[in-house]
Length: 278
Image (tube, rainbow, N blue to C red):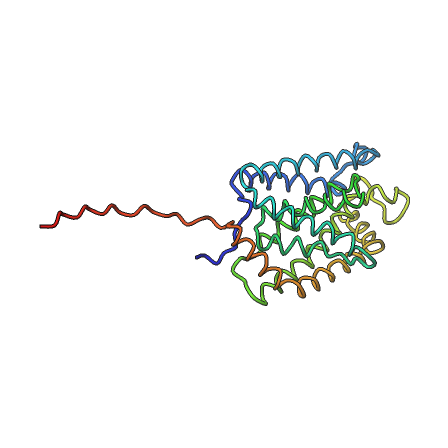
């Protein structure tokens, strides 16, 4: 039997193309402040967050439709719903002072075992379920869902041959980087609309990329870096403490649910009839 983890959501060529196109589109939705020109609708319009949120919703709809188009069975949906519910409950309970947030532990460990397609779907459904439970629905939610989906996708794409303590350390290191990246992306999404244009940290439409990056870096340092580092530290501690038992439990669940492709049984060769006894 192969020791490779199962892939609950099959990433077919069409799904891979959808993921690539959606990721590029989503990245543009996050990084547009570095590309926009003065006088454009995005630079001056107050409806830009809503417009971009609708774009991200469309991106997520395309990818999730491709992922669930015959690529996941009822057992996979059940596991996805269970992990999404766990993450949705853990998130509001742990999202306290200094960025103590354990939801990424669930996402990265689930995606590590069950594959990149499952990880992408798990990131989106976990953040959506959490927002519905806590009333945190707004134009920021699609951006949170897409960023969390990228966290799950990346965890599912980590090298598969690593096991034991090295695997836990690998997932913990990835979780730290992903947690920081999540915070940076969310800052970038709404930085142009939070400060106006009268501060040294404000976004300036059409300014050189280096200048706007400097302003954004100062904005991040002044507003959310402590929270983001706290999120990264929490993720590392959670993975180090819970990583091994949860990885074992998830792998057992996957095997018992028969996510692994069934071995093909070849028909037995026909046995010639025995001659009659003399």
